[in-house]
Length: 423
Image 1: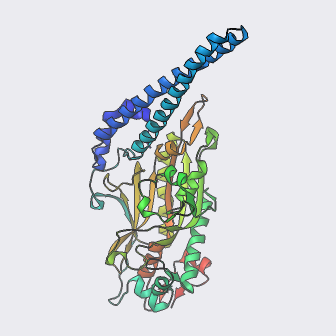
Image 2: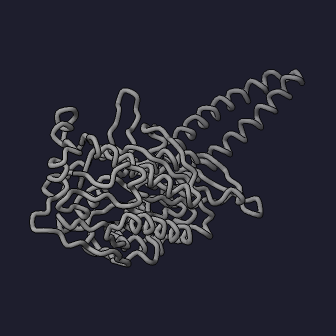
Image 3: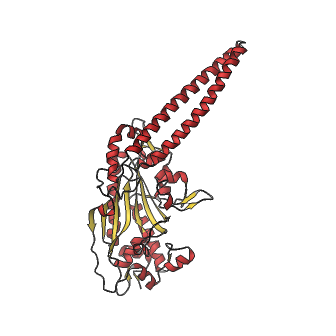
């Protein structure tokens, strides 16, 4: 969420910046400023009314002590009117604050200068590519056929138990899933991330804190009876650890990694491009989350990108990195890099990670602050990244590592799996 003071000071700059997202924010920002003026005027009236009421209460007390009951009772009538005014103004203030908050929730984060202009994913900018795309035989299969051939993933059984998008991993498929999770966690902790286990359900305040609500409400599974949400990513519970927290500068950097299943409704996703593991309602993911001093957040983002590169190099998967354009940028992000693995059997790129800097946008929602060297409270910066999302990594391994003898397991995973081939 953007800070009100920033909107007051930089309205025209923000309007121009949000044009990268193909958003004309002029009317919305003007509505925010007008409502903020109303809120501040109402607050001033309320403060003055309460001050006058307090002053009269003291005078009434003195009059009663002096035996001037008649004069005191006259003033008491006036304080009654002031109490009614205070209640009315308090209600008006609460309404204005709620309306203002709802308006602020509608404004996305300001894109970083590096974000390219563009409308769709076709306008994303490729900034890096690495790895050799293997040459497969003519009879090479996509991963959903390989899964059926070797009995490692049962999509039909998942449909029976729950519905489409909830696969059942079996035998070596389940062990490979577990191996990937352990490998990613180990690699993350090796470079300084602390492992953490968090709840898979969050309350509404957590959803608003990281920006899933109200922006992605229709994409989250909601448990109405308890008013809880199934997490779409570990970013939500991990980042919300710091909601309403004031840190010290010496606490930075704070680095967490965690494995969770993730749940997404993926409403409106249909067609051949979502077959198999390409798009699921439940999937496993290992996440990295950082809370940083504002002066270091972009250096931290670069470090996260390099770390994900290391994972894909060790898995020997061909990949590329895209800098997302304004039209494809997430609502809360200032700058995002997407990693995509090339699926040779499908002849297409599959997104397997997003690494983002949210700057102070989430921190403002979370009220996540730190005391600077002058003792003044400042907003921290938050970052997160997939490290990594399993379904498409697994799809890439199955498709790119298939041979006539079976599916060869990347060397770094063999100690975790206990086998080097699926056949």
